[in-house]
Structure formats: structure tokens, C-alpha cells
Length: 149
Image (cartoon, rainbow, N blue to C red; front, top):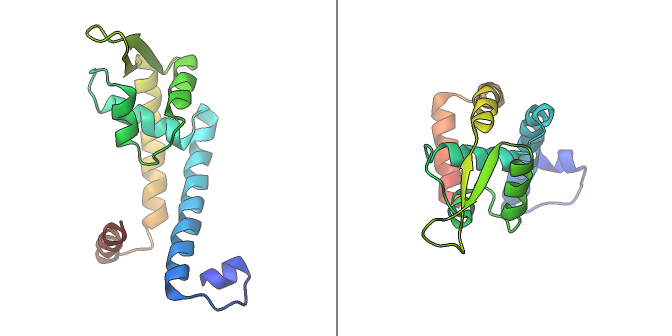
């Protein structure tokens, strides 16, 4: 379906507007699907991203700056995201032993367990989302999106 039909507009959109609006609309749809999967676990897509970043550190604590740098969605409220994960027992914070002004962040065993389970659900959803594309089309889309970035 054309983006004009989805938006129910009769206005002629330029190709650059169609591209940007289509990417934003699709991003919103993908976020809704993935957030729907995460909702029963009481974590958001951004919190899921933080947990994956921390798991990738393989038990090495990291600073808030490292988490922010590696996030898919760069945002200013990363501290609040971390605090919510701490309150849920999925992440813990400690004062850095060499620099007391810094905070080290790490994932808990409970965070790892939830992440392992949720990863499977997200992986299946991702496969379903792109199953209409051939391997060639997937590669092409990845290349085109990288070119836009």
C-alpha cells in the first residue's frame, strides 16, 4: 500500500518526503510490534536494548556513557531507563572503584534469564516481519538503509 493511502492524503508527496515518512511510519510499526512482545515482561524496547548492551559486556561493568553510545535510539533519559531496570532487579549499579564519580552498570542473573527468553520471541518476530523479502531484497534493503544513514 502506498504511503499516501496509509496517511489518507490526496496531497502529492515528493519522493524524499515519501521515503522519510515511509521509514518513520515503518519504524513506528516495528516498535509497536516489538513493544507488544516485551509488554508482558514489563520492559520497553529501549530497556531491552540496554539489557542486550550489558549482556554483550560479558560481566564487565560499563559506564552510562558506554551504554548511551551503543544504544540504537540515542536519548537523554538513559539514566532513568537504567534506574527502572535497577528497580526491576534486572540491572545493578556500583560506584567505580578507581573513580568514585563514575557509576558502573551491570546486568543481573535475572536480567540475563529474561533476556534469553525474550530474545527467542524477538527473533521469531523479526523473521516474520521480513519473511516477504527474498535474501537479495534483504541485502538490498540493508545496503540502502546504510546508505541513507
